[in-house]
Amino acid sequence: MTGGDDSWLATIPADAGRDPVLVRAGLRVHPGLRLGELVRRRPPGITGHQWNTASRTVLDLVVCAADTGRPGFAVEFRPPMPDAAGRRAERMMQAVTAAVGLPVLRITSATLRAAEHGPQIVGYVIDARRYADGAAAGSELPDVGFRDIVGRLPDGRTGAVNDLGALARADAVEAYVARRLADPILRGLHVQWTDGPAEGWSWVEVRPGECLVERVSLHPYRISCGVDPARLAEDLAALAIGDRLRTPEAAAPALRRREDLLDDIRRLRDRRDELVDGFGYDHLCEA
Image (cartoon, rainbow, N blue to C red; front, side, top):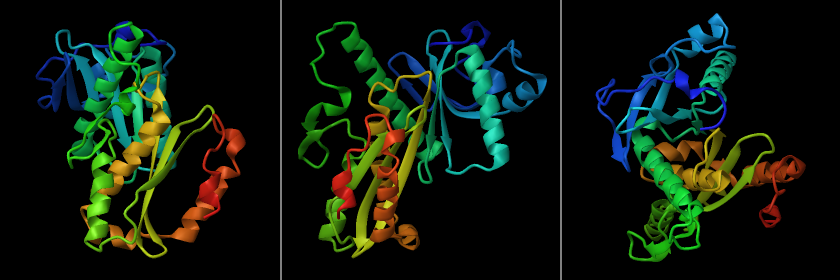
């Protein structure tokens, strides 16, 4: 962990709250812990108002060392566009977690939820971080990133086994064969805002000229995801598309006109100066 003084963090017993939703690689993942359960007392530099508000904040998933109960990082799932009160509460929570050195990964999505998707996503981050740590330590891991490891996919094809959107991409092909989609390809993009979150988009054409669209933002506060966060955000958006393809009746009212989506992409292109490494999707704007 970086920044803050993590001596203020409490140890979390194995039976804290509900049972862990995941035990993996010497870590256990607890759902629904209040920040006040993780921090012993109000840290220096935090006002009483900040502490009273932030300590009641519920962190969706908290990853702890299995042997010591020491919190390692937390993951939050948030819907897009919180109201003013929600934004203030997030800022106060962020001030407290920064003060005590607790890394937080915030996932902003209209579809992804902690209960349904959290264990899979947290398990992925744990594995990716272990892989990256092993590579940095000079182990015999192959010279390839975690996301780019190739193997056999569940549908029998060969591809990137650590692509969280792989099943969604296969589902799209099956839905196209079943005439539920106008196009079998999940398309997407990802960007990194300068001094801001990573953002991933994914979409598929359900009816001619009408698309199912997902956008996911990742805010890694003092934490490495083990993979490029922007690329992870795009994979998460594809994962969300797959979730919605399995409930097409719920997705239909939310379809977007393809031209409106292209306009959004062009607006993103016009802000290329605000992006790390610019904008690499000019070809999409010409469609």
